[in-house]
Amino acid sequence: MASNASFKKVRLKTEPSPEDLKALELGDVVYLDGTVYTAREGVYRRAVEEHIPLPLELPAMSGANFHCSPAATIRPDGTFNMGAVTATASFRFSKWIGEWLDLSGAKLILGKGGMSSEDYKKHFVPHGAIYLTTVGYGTGALLGRGVKSVKDVFWRDELGLAQAMWLIEVENFGPFIVESDTQGNSLFERENAKISAGLSKAYEGTKPAVLKRFGETDDRSDELI
Amino acid sequence: MIPLDILEKTAVTLMEKAAIEIPEDYLEGLKKAADVEDGDLSSFVLQAMLENYEAAKEDRRAMCGDTGCPRWYVKMGNEAQVEGGPVALETSLRRATAQATNGVPLRPNRVHPLWRTDHDNNVGINAPEIEFAFEPEGDWVELTTVHKGGLFGTDYRMLFPSDGIEGIKRFYLDSLVAFGKRGLSCQPAIIGIGLGGSKDTCMVLGKRAACLRTVGDRNPDPRIAELEMEFKELGNSIGMGAMGFVGKSMVIDCHIEVGYCHTGGMQMSVHAFCLSSRRACARIYGDGRVEFRTDPQWFTPYQRRETVEWPATQASKKSA
Image (cartoon, rainbow over all chains, first blue to last red; front, side, top):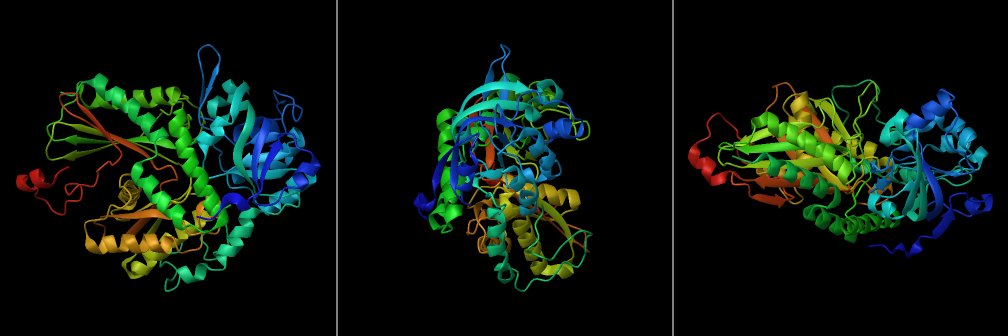
């Protein structure tokens, strides 16, 4: 197995300075300290489309938006039981992300699988934000260990446990990998390009299926997202 | 008569085990893949996953925060009787799903597809799925729960005989590459392929091939077994590894299941289980004894029977 020593490991605050972010390179491994909140399509729809005021002060309370629904319950006494924590695929939130960054002032978007470099360049770079991807997927138990406490949960009745906004205090929360840098480059796209170059060898001898379907592609550099 | 309280208690335990304990066969397979992986980023990911399984067991915390869609496979010996009958059994499994979702805790994923409403317990209309099968002998019930991811890594294509093995190969590669990018299918995984049947049975067979067979298990048809091994190799040679990074670990094993199909067609489905391969199984006997295991032993000779007769001698010799 290759050595992990080659990866730069960084402890980052959830309200990082522009200099902190500029120092990060694609592929760096990041652990977070501070406060993160979960927000995904349910929150985006309410905040961006329905213009409902956010139930917490952002980015004052946190600059890190996690695309996540925790495995968690609220006990009858109102306390929280949070187990594993794993991200959900972020590309689905592309249509909201620009306005969301305006609204939230988030500097870190945490999730699964990243977004397109087009989104990074158009939305993330002007806001001085970067994308950190979870690892695996997913290292739910390791991330769960990094949760120090659940500070609050918002919009629980409106959105249900999975889509609610969970505000969580974290320490050494990770691992994450730097997927986009301050220039808007994408690690996944860099890797895709390397892999696409060699794919024709694996496909050697095959031909397109007899039955065609609308929307299919034979361009293997294409992506689903 | 199988006591209902034992059945329900066992089902809750299975939900916990599936969520928390990585099955040994998959763990061994993944360790072997990690040993030969030379992509830096892919190696880092596999190492992190191995640490994650340890953390989950130590903390008794779910391996993955995304519970996927918990479902049940129930197998009954021909002489099995459950207290309260099959309706009580189904109710117990629904109750156990809800109870474990709140107890472990697991993520309450299941919502109404249109109204997005939620019971916060992974139970709802047609959820969890409960599928039944039978074996010729025995007074036992076997429960298997599988927590399979719900969004990516699965696809279907209507192929024809003229597409041939090359067409099967191409669709297999298409599925791995398309969903492998950015690691959407949570690879490396056990890949299940369904061939034949009709569209729905083809999907069912492929999903069961991915979720109900263990690493190293081979189809009893030697030519299919050969194809399984060839496809495992092929999947690991496309240059991609964990999270879609450069590497060579995509497929921990490949399982193929077939069903007789229309003479004009060759339906195919591909299913990627995930990096946590969450499955747990138990056999509950008529006297209340419970045996836990991680191998569902679903595909017995009886499940793959070819023709109409099933002589008793064959049943007693080969049934699980």
